[in-house]
Length: 314
Image (cartoon, rainbow, N blue to C red; front, top):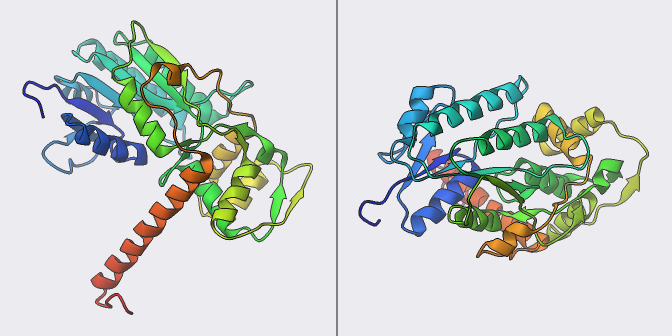
């Protein structure tokens, strides 16, 4: 760490993107200040509750750049909560010396967005209205362990004995690998920026959800027979996903609603400006995610057996 280096604040530090970003920033020699609503995990961590203005001001003290990676999808009025938290953060920014905010949001559909996507877009708009320049990156599915949309595709590819194809499975997007998201977030910190702006963050492949499922099933040694159906409501689709993937019903329903429309980028301007380029095809990103999850599951099983005194051969 260089002397007199100002910290980089990471809000949402315990999430799957936050954890990877902290590791990447640390590898680059940056002074990272991870933030959590709970008890700090170590001396460098800080407590930051976005519903408590004093807590936000303390977390922002001396910060050069802040990454806003906070999202919530709950059964209650999470949209109002996200709006309030973003507004609190913007007010605290005005009195801080922070020079840039980087926000990871979601791609806007051509038509009316789902409640989940609308909330993410609204947070981006609030942050871009701050006195500090804010750069919003909009991604569709992030392919990596911890991503709810990836977990659903993974579980469907692994467990479906037969694939019913409602219309929403034909919607297209540009999924992006977690390592490419991290590369983009690192570049976003130093991208020349005179005023707040947003950029789409597309991966290299344009795929339907159906095509993703076929690829993920193939990577797991499976071939799933399929049949098209004319109508399957979001509620029924969410119940189907809940039974197969284990995701909570409200989360599954929000994801289904978000997938009803194509989530395609307006352009690829960000990659023209950034140093990083998206390297990972969907197939390679899915293979990496499956391999990572398999290793983590193996380690978890060893730990569980050690805790219960069984040993690795039990």
